[in-house]
Each structure stands twice: as C-alpha cells, then as structure tokens.
Image (cartoon, rainbow, N blue to C red):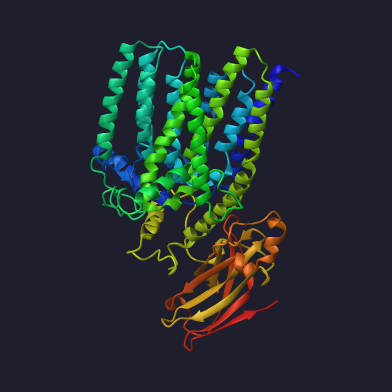
Length: 618
C-alpha cells in the first residue's frame, strides 16, 4: 500500500468522529432561537441604527461591551452580527460556526500532538481518543445552542497560545507574545472563563526558555500590566443587560445574588460541584438517572489519578526536552482546573446539580485530554532510552488502556445521540411556536404578558422580522392555507383529544396525545374553527426515568402508552371560542415539511351552555 494512501486512511480514521458529527449537525440543526439567542435582536437593531447613522461609535461600543450575565461577549456579538447578516437571519449558522470551532480545536491539538510525540505511532490512537471526546454527541447542548458560541471560543484561543509559546526553537519571541496576548483578549471578551488564560499565559512566558531571562521578565511584566488593565475594565460598571440571566434582571449588577462560601453549606456545595465538574463525563449515560453522586466520585478519582501521575512525573529527574514536551499539556490541565474553581463558586449559588450540565463537558474534557497525552510523553522517552520497540510490554498495557477508554465512550455517545434527538424535536417545537407567536395568546407560556420574562421573545421576533433578519418567519395570518395536507387523517392510536373541560373563567382546557410515528412527535397541534387556527396545542412531555435497559428500543416503546410518551395540552380563551354551537377540528403539524394531518377526533362546543363533547370517528 502506498505510504500516501496509508496516511490518508489513518487521517480519515482518526478524524472520523468529526465526519460523523458534521453530518449530525447537518441533519439536526434547526433554524430556531433558544434562550439567549433572542438577545441578538436588540444587538442587531443597534447595529442597524449605527449603519443608518442613528447611533455613534461610543454608543455601539458601550452595548458591545455590556455584560451578558457575568460575560463580556464582545467577540461573539461581532460574530453574530456578521453571521446573521450573511445568512439572512438563519440561526443555524451559529451552530455551524460552533462546529467549526470544535474542528479548529481538533486541528490545533493535532499540531500539538505531533510536536510533542514526533513520529511516534501513538500519535494516531491518542488523536482518535481526543476526537472521540471533542466530537461526542454529548456536546449537543453546546453545538445546537447558538449562544454556546461564547463558551467555545476560549479553548481555541488557549490552544493557540500553547502552540505559539511552546515552540522548541523561537526567534520571534515578541511577535509570539503579542499574538498570545491578543488571543487572551479574545478569550476574555468571549466568555468569563477566558479570564483564566491570563495566569497560564504569564507562566508560559516565564518558562519560554528559547528567549533570554531578561526578555522573559520584561514580557511577563507587560502581560501582567495588560491583564491587570483588562480585568479592572472587565468588572467596572458590571451591569447585566440580559433577560435570560438566572435570577438577574436587566439593570441588575452582574454579581447580584452571589453568596459567601462561608455561609451555610455553600462551601461544601462548591466542593461537590468542583468534583462533579470533572467526573461528569462517564457519569452521563442511559443507565444513570441521578448522575450527581456518581460524578462527584468519578471527579475525585480523576483528580487523584492526575495528581499521582503529576507527582511521579515531577519527582523523577526529567531532561529539558521532556519538560518542554509536557508543559503545554500541563498548562492545558491547569487552565481547566482554574475554570473548575471559577464555576464552582457559581455552583454554590445556583445549585451543585448544575455541575452535570452537558455544556460544562466541553471544558472539563480537556483534563482527560491532558491525562491521555502526558503518559505517552513519558513513555516515549523511556522507549528511546531503552531502545525498546513501541510494542514492548508497556506498549501492550498502553494499548489495552486506550482500548478500554475508547470502549467507555460507547454509552456516552449513545446517550448523547438520544439527547440530540430530544433536543432536535424541542427546537422544531420552538419553530412551530414562532409561526403563531404574533397571533395566538398561549396562557401556559404567557408569551403576551408584558410582565413575564418571555415578553422580549415576541419583541425579538418582531424586531428581527422588521430588519429582514429572520429567515424562518411567523405566518402572516393564523390560517391552514400556509400548510400542505396529508390525505389520510391520523387514527386515534397516533393522535387524539383525550380531555376537554371548561374552566370557571370560560376558557376551554384541552389535552391529548399526537405523533406521526415512533420517535416522531407532532411539533404542535392546531385547533381550528373552519380554516382559522384559534389555539396551539404544545407538547407537554413527562419527566421519565432514564434507566432504559438494553432492550429499550424493542420493548419499552411498546410498553409505555402513546398518551404518556407524546402528550400535548392547550387552553382556548373564551374570547377565541365561537359564540354559537360549533365544531372544532385538530391538526398535527410537521413544521419541517410545513405539513398538517387532521385528527379523527373533533370537538362539539357550545359556549353558552358550557358543554363540550369529544367526537371520535374511525
């Protein structure tokens, strides 16, 4: 086999997780805003006003620098302006960009692996194991939530710093330091944990042995000065502007509600959060319903293993080349531990259970990455010193450990794919809501209540639509004419109205179930009077245990009643109901195809007598 062809096959194999996840993003990304993504509307309105000459540079800069919860997201805001205008308001572009950042992370790590392991054949399994972490579907919450663009940027910046300041020989010291400082600024102004790059950068500059001590001290003093100014500005006038900000409101100080670790059991909560932050990876699986305790145990074990390995590495006299190869990976681990300490304080305020939130894995996984690389660096030196081939007994042990680590990813990937599927349907249901948001009052969401936290969502839809920066637009009117229709109605085994009751205020409460097929719930249920949609039934899933069992796909779906798996509910206000006795119909909506299917169940309603009858025809 030609060497070039063999090399290509190895590259395709090693980066196959990236290829798989790229296709997953293509299939599962949905053009719908989620939480903080609706905060883009005021930003884009201000950008439009600036372009029209209605806003000055200083006013625009003030908004770009304003705090989103505890984050100065200047760089993500600039990216959002560019991506939104280029895409015409397609939210998926932010999700695509996040994947590109993950791809950049992988490429930068590949460069680092080749630099530290040279031509060792272990660079291939190491990079494959790293890619299994980076591109795991368990990152669904990062990849498919555009606002996580913020949190994805700092790691790429850190990896760039490691490559710039970890070169074995360097004659462009000042340029590399200047570029590293620029990357640290980008990280800091993308997400709060970017602040943790500054101490890592300072240490790397001091350890940069290719430059003279005088240069290193001068550069470190410069880095320290820039860091001090940056951090001082960061926390000055630290006022939150976000609606989606936990318990914060726009205008609140971003640190409002922060508690002292010495109060109550906050210190213990922070400690538990810290350990769970590092142990969540293997705690998240289909077979664990409450992963927090397991995550804490695994976190303690992970940190102990890392600490013991580090002590062994430090206690043995290592040549300079060995330290040079290890320092970037140690710096990566130090950064992750620093971020863990930062978020653990926040965990004491919002609850330690948040430690197992999947989006934290995009940071904590890099401790595992470092732990995978460091033994190979040490093993490479021993192999060279003893003139042993890499298939020696130690190599066999390493191969067994790598195989075990890779196999351990199977349940994590399985669970990640399941959650990706759930998230995808949730985003489709959000699209259905956007279609009718300006037209229908939904009591369960209170989206039209000016005193509710959701009021800004309809403002955002109207703002983006008015700027022609909303690709998936609301309907011009709440009619069925905008949808194609399936010729065959859905039978009651797939969709039905089960409960219909008048409330004391005259509103009509409805609930039932609706699906098109197995694992294919309806994105919404349309209640119609003639061709006019008067209410939107939204999916109302129950909290079900995640202990599925090995035969879940073959038995559990059949065992659980459809009405339990695919429920929906809605409230039709009295003002929306017909004044005389009438018949209401129900339609299941597939928002991707913009297609509806009529239910065989209908309602006979008489508001004057407060009587309602469910009619089921087969």
